[in-house]
Length: 142
Image 1 (tube, helix red, strand yellow):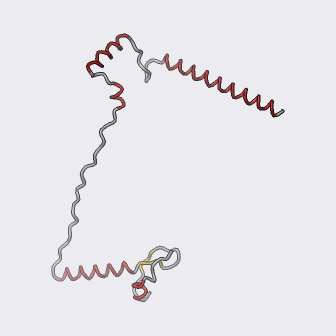
Image 2: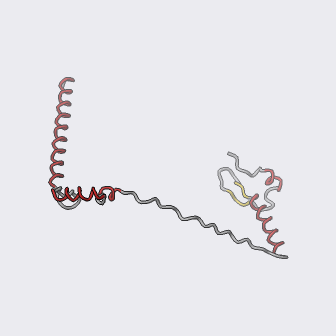
Image 3: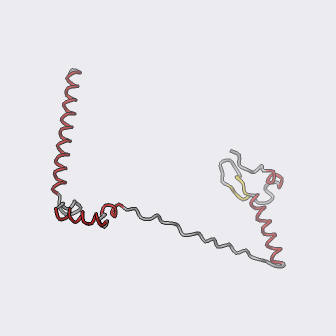
């Protein structure tokens, strides 16, 4: 098949496809015009037009606006912040709490990646020098 014949064949095929598509669109338009019931439009009669004109002058007929109306934006409820209760210790309990907080802060310093590409782990006392932990030698380097 020559190049020219192939181009003519492709043009004819495209033309046939366009004609089929136009024919389908016309058939679909006719089908929609004949639809009744379900979700189709109700037929427009002289009586419905008169009712529309009367209500339009009164401002009561606005079916399209009611159907497409957007609801009011929902406003979030105001956030109520409840303060966290702070325990108040006295005497020996206050001393123990202070010591526990100091130990907790030291334990936070003792978490580090033990090896390359490993997650953070707790390093127990004695496995590293205290100077290594405080100087930052256990921190992950990227």
